[in-house]
Length: 475
Image 1 (cartoon, one colour):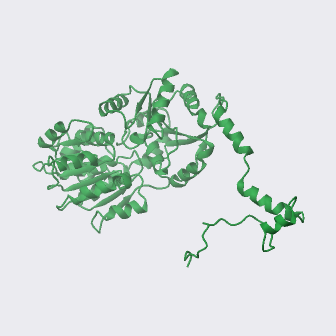
Image 2 (spheres, one colour):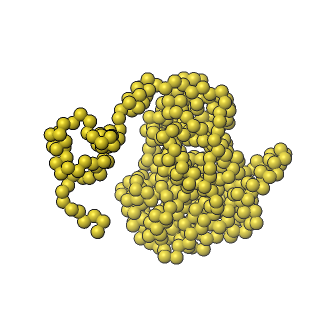
Image 3 (cartoon, helix red, strand yellow):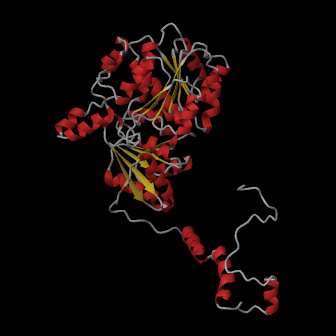
């Protein structure tokens, strides 16, 4: 969330260049939190956390939010965006006004994380935070709001549910935040966000933040903001933090599990987060690793919320060395000691890759991101490299012996190899005889039936929709 306390260790080891890279990459050492205009009770929470210098996004976003402007903030993952919008809200919130801030996030895990950070930072203030998510007691959440609930952090579904039951109100909302706004305004959440924001009728300040914000998302975001909304971008060069060593490993699909097991045993990373594309793959990989002596845990959307919370708590306490996850965890896991992120499956959306590998190299630590790329993944890899501006280094791993090609795949490949291409077959059929000056074994009568106008084609016919009617296309 803030500056890493491990800088002294870097100096002991003599890595002065690493320190300079960390400081220039993430922190604004020209300013301290004391100079940002925050009240003493808020600063006390920051000070007790052991932090003095803000990150670059915090140094720019906090004064802008304090000025009352609507803000779009974009910064790399792991650079403290939660504190960037949370600290000024804690500073400006009215202790006598319940339900005055609404912070919407895409996942339950991220909601828990954000609410926890705000409670910790605001522990010396009278401002209390309530986490509103599905899978947990609605009555407990209603009780929490009634006992304080100045700041509501939640996922759209449960927030809409409680509002529809008239258990929470937006009548006094002064601050609206969309965290991970690119995800919040995509197709899946867009209608819910529109409904919620239309219910906030009073004068309010809007803050949208994310690591990735496309032109389309920015245009949509601005439709919910004041015309003079300010955009603050601290992303320079690559969207990914330079402290992440990004490497790609070429692998056949059937060898992925064995390669992952090989890397875990050979490299012995500290804490590993493995991302899979589907929940079924998450479960399958977890079972495989456990069967081979690796104590792995899994987290995905089908897991009960109580179990998800338990896994996340164990992860933060350092009791989980290998976590296999769906993209549920790509935007809801802030654990500083994650040393490696493995893209077991490359994501279809390259922006998801940015959020995935942002789980490592948190708070100024170095990290490693491995990407498993199959022969069919070339286009995905290209799109990721284009978005991030990073050419991934090829990792030639030693000691791993690829397994044999599965029988069903070998049979399919053999079948594809001997199956003629219909287009080529058609071309050969009409051009080969013409090239030799005759039509093979066809009789004169057969040739007349085939080519009644006497014109023998020399190439395959163009593909059409089979219609005799003219279209207006192209006019």
